Each structure stands twice: as structure tokens, then as C-alpha cells.
Length: 115
Ligand SMILES: [Zn+2]
Image (tube, rainbow, N blue to C red):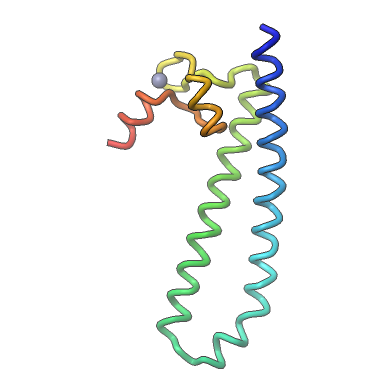
């Protein structure tokens, strides 16, 4: 299975670089948060600052949950369990993995989960 090996190698390097990117984004956002508190107080618009907080939190949450997915995918690669559905143990389509490299479930199980 030489092809699978090089595919995994590619996925792993993609995931690792995406991981670095996300960590950097989260770090930048935390920096910004500290600097922007004064601006928000100047505006003195409680509603919009609340909305901004909410927005910022949800962005960070999305990034953190993506980080978690990436970590889990990297772990599955190390355990040689990558590309196998965690629900039904069938192989996940390569096309799906190319589009969504940290997919833990095949399309059928994912759809069943989201319904
Ligand atoms: Zn499945």
C-alpha cells in the first residue's frame, strides 16, 4: 500500500501546517482582545461590545474545535486508524478525506449523526 502511505504523509503534513496556522490565529486574537478593550469602552455601546464578544468567542470556539479535530486525526494517523469510520469501521472515501481531512466518520454515519 505505497499509495496510502504517501497519501497519509501528505494528509499529516497538511494537518500539521493547518494546526500551526490555527494556533497562530488564536494567539493573534488573544493579543487583539487585550488591545481592543479600551476601544470598546470608548464607544460605550454595550450591545455592540456584547455582540463582538459573542462573535469573537464563537470564532475562537470554531478554531479550538477544529484544532481538536486535527489532533484527533493526527492521533489516528499515528495509530494507523486513519481513514476508517469510527462508527461502522468502513473505510472513508478518499475524496471525502481530501475535502475534509479530519473526517472521523464515513459520509453515511456523518449524515445520520447530523439528522
Ligand atoms: Zn461509517
